Length: 202
Image (cartoon, rainbow, N blue to C red; front, side, top):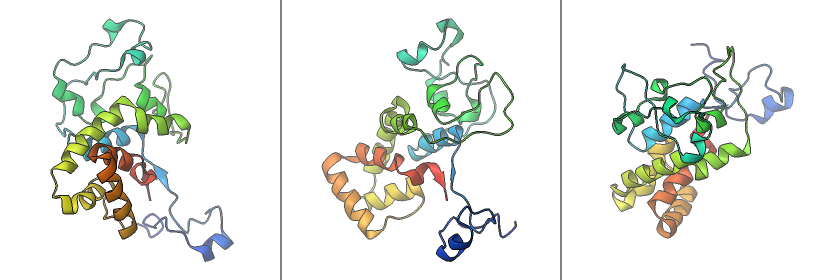
């Protein structure tokens, strides 16, 4: 409940001139969401996140190329009930010798050893996973279906509120509307997923 903990990440030129590295904590440092939170946020924006609690771990399907990481396919018995695939990431099956590629890309810990503190990297494969990855693209399509149900007059506002928790500025709205008219709802959904604001906490 401290004032420091509740600080905004907003930039302050006067404070930055004195403490550019923020060692005195005059603002909150931006923080990227953990791999599990990113996956859950994609599902939530798509309107698909299943909040059911408890039960056995969920083994989600992976694409053929990813299965190359599993020596024996019988050791990755995909859950028969496909509705379970949308459960929160905390319920995903974890195999020590195989991490889900998307989760690994966003620094999920190595499960073969103890992890006292997670790393938070910024690397090119993360952008590729959000732009071209099978999971991100499939959730963008679901999010696009959700956006399409909104009144056309408020479609862009609705998309921003769902994905980013805020309304767009007038400039953002005009650009997003033009993009929506040209590329469609699925493309707009994927665009919002790829804004840094979607995966960073300010």
